Amino acid sequence: MKKIILAGLLAFASTCFALSQDILPVVAFNKNKPVTEAKDPLVTSAASNPLPLIEVDQKILKDFYRSFENATDIRWYAVEKKGTAGYYNVGEKKGRCFYDKRGRFVYSILTYFEKSLPLEVRDLVKRTYYFDYTIDLAEEVHSNGETFYIVHVSDSKTIKLLIVYDGEINVYKEYNKSK
Image (cartoon, rainbow, N blue to C red; front, side):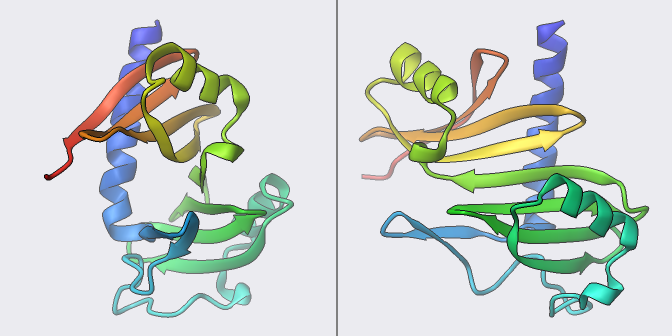
């Protein structure tokens, strides 16, 4: 059963990364502080500015404020033929969420640094498998009632994206650093 769920999470992660090409902002880092890139991939010729709150579906707003009650700096964007994306902050964490054309929640992703990673996830990564690696970034993904983490780790030679779910770690992607 775990293998089926893990396969689904890997497929979901691939979908999120594919969708992120169209609808999610690129987050860059400057001295350990996330900075949303000025040119947002979400922004298309049809939706170059945030939506006025009055234009966001009430179903979306009701769900969002119930789910993300501590969110600040909230911005909404129409994603042509796909739905609505929201960008927000929760303390030092950067969040983004996506709702389909019918106003149904699809997923949310919180991006943050190691210090905000839940202790059990950090310990699993650092103490069990990747003690020689640095945790550079973590993404907490919520979808279909499940939560998993995409943890970006690196050492002097490689960068790895790990999927952490239900006490297990799987390497999602691995890159060699150029010399």
